[in-house]
Length: 106
Image 1 (spheres, helix red, strand yellow):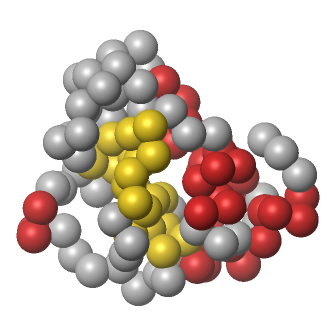
Image 2: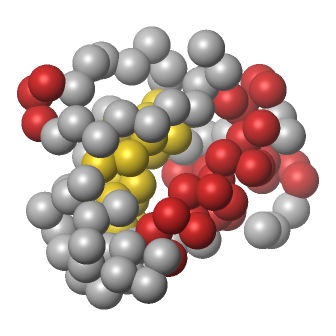
């Protein structure tokens, strides 16, 4: 597994991640109304694909709703549970503690 997966489950049915951190990107009807949630998801995956060490430590997955609805993309960092509204890729990777910090802004 390359650390990047699609999982549209919500709640306790979701399997535990073997990664140190997990970024859950909401792609529900409100957060992704204009495709911004999926655009953020694609940008995260692209950044992580460029750095296999980070991809091994951070899993990026989706949820159909994080129950924190806005008109902006919402991302939850696990295991801390921190929520980010309309974050940049740099914000998320910094919060997840990746080596991205050394490579500059998104």
